Image (cartoon, rainbow, N blue to C red; front, top):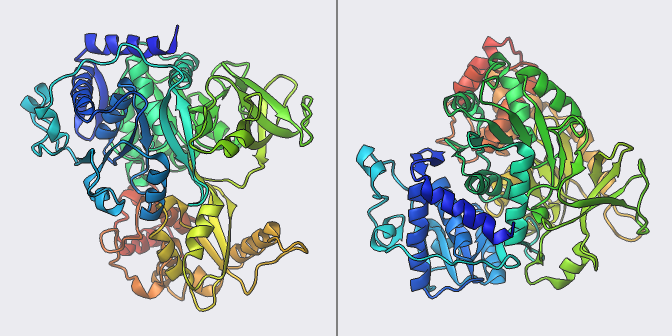
Length: 608
């Protein structure tokens, strides 16, 4: 079946089943009929703006419903969606916008000024949508502001949609992490996108009664593609009631039961936290409807894989892929032949090979670079022919930058990374981008960033700097103004000089060894104090990267901007490691202030 026909067939099915749920989110349920009606009305706006197939349109929103519908509208109208994380810093956002050259912008109202979009033509502000009552859910009454989305829908007439889409045209552009001077916009074609989503549906065994649960961030490939787009292509619901946080883990398991979920899409960090903190809910996934957990976005350790399956009694599929391959390429499971814990299985609908440094194809058991080829591979990097040539070569084999080997039975195993990429809780972090942000501080003379092993996150971001007179708290606060939260270093090591070889290049392994030694030999000020209260405050200061003097037992997420969902996870893990205790889901829900942390630690028998 030709690629455009996949989307056309899915569209016809959606319009013929208007009452079927497409998206279940914080606002309630959005049916396929209302979603399609919104797409047709947005097509009217695109026509009014004079947009043509192939034009690029920027999309950035924290609202799940807005992102899902607008992304679908752009694809269905043959426009190229440029999806940007709304937490992207202003400097980087302006650079990426200049590189992508969008003809129109659909962005949160608060980003228009920050990203330099004020005064531009064809800019639509996106505002949060309020949950409506029963009558509002029966009719299309999305908002009140006619100059912003979704309120503008009321003044738009439904438009006829294109009959044909060019399968080789760009469906979307998604930027990988990188420096301001070297950003990479991955171009995924319609053929690559819809063919691969068809493969995912077949491998996962999606059926008419399937229900997906995917609350990964929609500005990333695993969130948008394996959530709303995968659901739309196969005509099934996708459930996204709230973001994943420690406080919502049990509610997430309840939602799996309530919505009769069949497939859970998650990153390894989520599986580690569920296995660690929800052992009292061992039967939560053992329902008549539930079929499969899909682990994606980073390496799944063999021990975690086995523990999760033993704890919850459900099968886990391990997916390997990159932003450059839509989502996947290699699958370990669900079939017995490929379900090999510790491996990434075998390629499906693509080719894979292991290549030595000299270009020779490696034999079974011999390590080399994993390379992939097929329709799922990107068309190239946006406006970057040299980077595209380096990544794809003349024959279209994608150089993944991952070191691996092919075992005798045909299953592939990832051994590490050739390229210096840090994967923190499913987020890809390029160390150069972090170092660049730190070097923007006038007091930082040198900086280098690298990953350190972490039992929960997979890796943590660490930086070593030469910055006389600065401290970790102030430098982390500076980095937070330029980086998304998941990219801010968890650890900053201050050195008098960075160790270098004879060529002048920084010896990264020597720096990493110093950082690991510093973690093992934390000073008394970092490890705690004479009292339990002092120890908890010190641990919180370390997790939040702030001076302990600005914290007190009343400190909470409302009073401390550094206390976000990411650092909350770090605080829980830090308290458990520091005091040798295990926090229950009830403890995590009750952890609203640092005073609560002291109380919980005391109840668990912690000592300073």
